[in-house]
Length: 224
Ligand SMILES: *Cc1c(COP(=O)(O)O)cnc(C)c1O
Image (cartoon, helix red, strand yellow):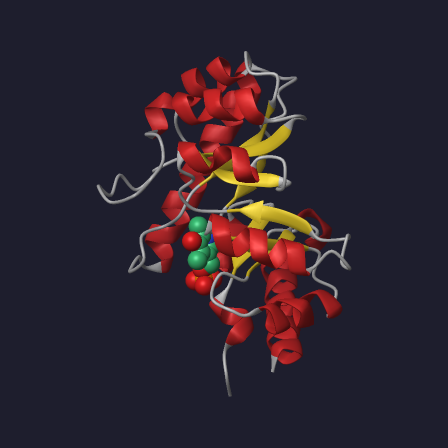
């Protein structure tokens, strides 16, 4: 099942890249394993996946400990990270996709022993329940983070509204790409160049808008 799902997702990534003449090598497939057990997670890695994402600190730590035999894995943390949990995780992950406030940044700065790659989460759609800074705050926030030497801002992250149409998804993703372009235009040497956007139900649209990291869970674990 998993290998078929994976084949299909990889094919879709290729198709979407072809539509906008970009290369599939520019899109990193991050498998979101928050809903599956250790055995299923390991199966993915055996299928060649080297980027895994979790969204609960305790579950992440258990999984990582159980997977010491797979040092090729890059660990991504998605979702809300509470400040009091930073110290237990900050030196265990390779990427954080949910940096959206300076208090969290300060805690990372205090606890990290080496630079952490972070995506700034942006609430493009403006939904009240969503995490992330407003689009108007992106430039200032990224500039502020330049003062934190334990944080490497690698790009911007967003989520489209759950019930959005492909047209609305496209608008959200293009807006994030435009914000990234603004940062790069103002700071040509910035490391804030990547776009983490696209999940199981909208990654094709995200790739068409320039996504370089897609975070895909349920599409990999579908049955039948
Ligand atoms: C769960 C989750 C995903 C993956 O969602 P699917 O719809 O299962 O692909 C991606 N990003 C974030 C932030 C998530 O919480």
